[in-house]
Amino acid sequence: MKESMFGLFKKKEIPLLRVLVNGDEVCKISEGDIPCEKLPSRRLEAGSTIEFIDQSGDSHKHDLGGFSGWFHFSVRVHPNRACQADCAITGDEEYDQNAFSQGKAKGIRFQPFFITGAETSNDIFIGKGLFKRGLHFNGNVTNGAISLSCECEHCRNSFIINSFHSGFSNLGYFYSDSGAYTLTVSDRLPGSPAALSTPDESELKELESKLPLAPDGTRFKYRNSFKCPHCKEPYIDFTANPEERVAEYYGNYFPDKGILQYEPDHG
Image (cartoon, rainbow, N blue to C red; front, side, top):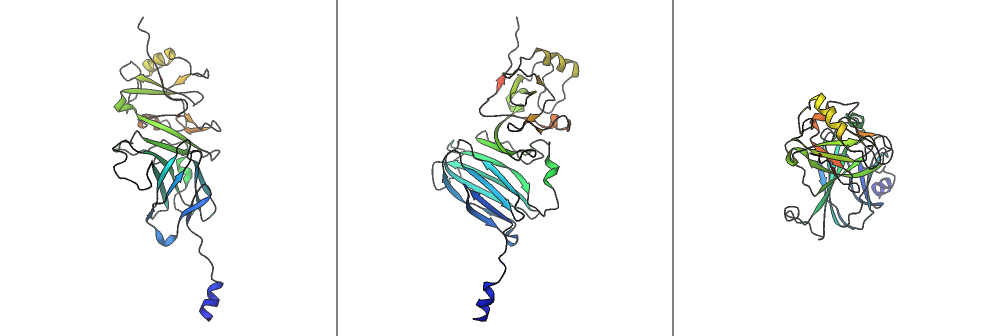
């Protein structure tokens, strides 16, 4: 009896991480659980959200966009307190491992982060490319059915983007001054920033002078940053991190804007 009475006053352990979908907790992870993977599934409509709240109250919230169906989440926390999460979206309550290969699934990969208390700060990612952020991986091709959910370090809002492998597509790409539009060019054109290559500066300037204006009237340039659609601050900041430009062989675009393509006039 004494033990149960004292148990009433026992301090409740605060989870290392709580995961909420549309405000409802779907899983939680304690210090003693890691390394671990949690696999909650939920049937969701378009406009839903997922939120990761750590023990300090720091939150990483992602809008799930226009996707609907069964969301099969994977939340992984590593010994260094790094959290990686993604989800497969299908029409079935039970997840089929072959759904992607059969074209029956779409996915979202969420921007990884370090839980408060980790030796590494999330500030190391500011302005860096998607390989550094853990949204793409060298040596592994991201399935075209997987979208990426990014989190802006400036305004903390999330946004969904799609990527294309410029090497496999034989394309170079440019972002507009506004960061809102993506233009592709054949990697055979002189000055084209082909994947993993540094373009000749004079040929690049010549090519840039021929590119059309973006729909919002801004210019396309090789070193323009990819920007947050909410606050317009650089997300992949090629000005602050010029070494990232050659390494970023995935081009990115916003689903509602699509990809623009430059077709040279051969006269």
